[in-house]
Image (cartoon, rainbow, N blue to C red; front, side, top):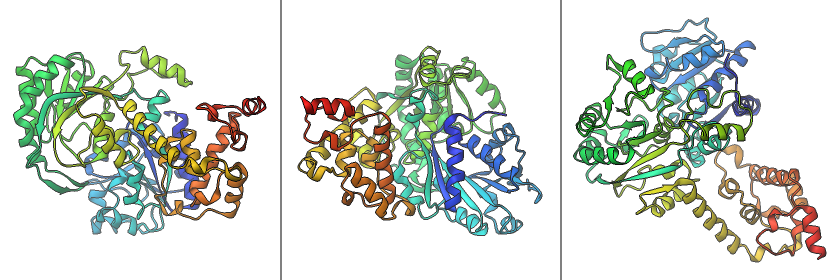
Amino acid sequence: MKQFRDYQLDASQSILKTWEQHKTCIATIATGGGKTLIAAGTSRYLIERGSRVLFLANRNELCSQPMVAFQEQGVFAALEKAESKASLQSRMVIGSVQSMTRKARLERFPKDHFSHIFADEAHGATAESWKRIFAHFDTAKVCGITATSFRADGKLLSEIFETEAYRKDLFNLVDEGFLVDPDHVEKLSTAVSLAGVRIKRTPEGKDFDVNDSAKAIEPYFRAIAKELKARFSNRHILAFLPLIASSQKFTEICVAEGLNAVHVDGEDPLRDEKLQAFRDGRTTILSNANLLHTGIDVPICDATINLRPTRSRVLYAQIIGRSTRTTPGVIDGLETVPERLAAIKASTKPNAIIIDPLWLSSENSLVSPAYLIAADEEMAEEMKKATNGKHAYSLRAIQANIQEQREAAIRRKLEAAARFRAGMLSAQYFAAAIGAHDLVNWVPIYDSEKVRTSRFSKTLLSNAGIDPDTVETEAHARKILQAIGIRRYRKLAEIRDLAGLEGDDVWTLTRAQAMARRAA
């Protein structure tokens, strides 16, 4: 049985604990973080206690992929999709929304048949097809799992899910040594115009029309191929195109330019052989359209190029996530973060890069690498502007600079209020002062996070030196108190210990250091 990593165990326990108080919740875990494994292990726990569980996949072709993860946890699931029909005796069912949303298919199951539902790719759960399934199994507890990057995306999902049970972002997993860092962006010099490319409604929401996109990008294939050969011939690249035909054409041009490139699609009889050749390093560019962004493990991939313009942050994160897996065995058995980071650094794949086309577009929602790390849409747009004219850059460096500017602005704005009137600080100033970036950017999204601050929490905030009138919700209060608790664990100075002290290092002082500086 495949063992959980610590964060995967935390995620599973958080989901179970959240279900004790809420009927519905969402768990956000970056691509490569093991979302399906978490669902499988949690399902095993539930089944052992007599539950029936449904794992909902978005499409028929995505139903078979979770089977391996469930089997690794000792859970043998029945399939409910297309021509496959699950036995009503099965305690675990993997079904597709595409099939189960049909009336006859859905009503085959009693309304109380499943006690728990995991909804994969839950960013699509606001669609009527998903809602129909949730409404039928209206007594079941539901957990949506997704890799969506912005917490603010939850605004769209809050009509379905009551609260967020767990979150683990891409760069959290990188910093803990579980994924390879894709921080470095290499911008292509070939400018691609998207003028005339229409926005159309798709099953996942509004996005660039793939036929228009294919026509727009094709004239630039040769220039892009030449640039790939000149700059990235030492990388193993996955290329994503709008259509199968455009992927085939791009591959032909890459080969003509001397690149070792191969196209693959779902109907290709040599699909498995081509994938293995790429895994073995015998192919350096593997091109596809809408095939390799989910359910494919190709650890040798250390670069991605997305030639399919998109507004979907989830699709983009899935594409980049193909390059972030460590090479096999590199971190196995390593229990500490420094050990894992050192092993990745010394491996044959110490990093990954994002090869980013130079899109010329007036569409602000065109997703770029900034969306992998930005806290919200506003920051993503600021980052995009900050990278204009740069041929290569670090996502983290750009984001850190903008975040520092935000926090400096907050500190300046609230400086007058930061004079420790009555020994208290505003919550926002405190978050900016200690560099708690997530706390600075935090806003209530789900209904459970909008409950007003309790009298008890206000007392705790006041005792800690935070003006309770600057904390409007109970969830925000808990975040602030958690940050204070972490400071206490690290033996850093209390807020009131720092009253009147000056210097850029004030918030790094221990309590003893603060007292010594005051005495001096």
